[in-house]
Length: 290
Image (cartoon, rainbow, N blue to C red; front, side, top):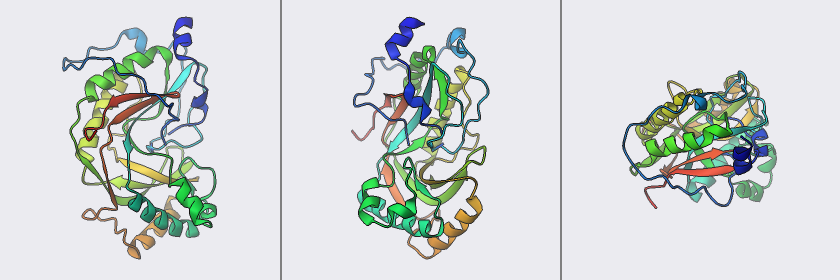
């Protein structure tokens, strides 16, 4: 075990991220992919991988699909935070339009914060250039699995199995059709998100199912039975879903963001699949557009 810990190092960054919804801070270089592609069925992992040497206890895992700055499970020495996600790249024009929409919403909901930013959104909106610099979030992403703690001896097995199941993916576009409000399990955070309702939904759902299979083999909690892929742009403390939904409904009526199944608020290309473990990033599937 000492040799393994020496290889990966302890993860101090796991104190700052939690939940369904920005990804963990990634290093400049990604872990090289060395596995050869193959399509043989996945064998079950060794029994020793199913349980960590020290129990992590019962944790309240969030379901919002977007990590916030306060984790929902306690930090345990030797644990690493696992997060599997699709990087989403939004065109600059769409980002600017979304920023203007959020600016209007924040004038009615002062407690909103940009995802991964501690400054309230209405404060940022007072100076236009600051809002543009924030760019709404450091990185957009769609979560494919719960953000959970794992042990060091599970890392290699999880990454290998994710690559085996997900490394070959076709091109597709992701349409974000609807502004939606989500609340985490313990009602401690409310999230304003853009939901995928049409284009890309079928492909993402299959990818979530593949991640669930890997999680299940490692005794990790699976994703929601009825997943709703999205990117989260803003959050607020507590459950303010009622008041926030009313504001969203009013603003979508008076703006170009209709949020119907036929319309698109913005569209992005499938950007591959990545896996963040602690402060390391693992490329699971390259973008088919590269």
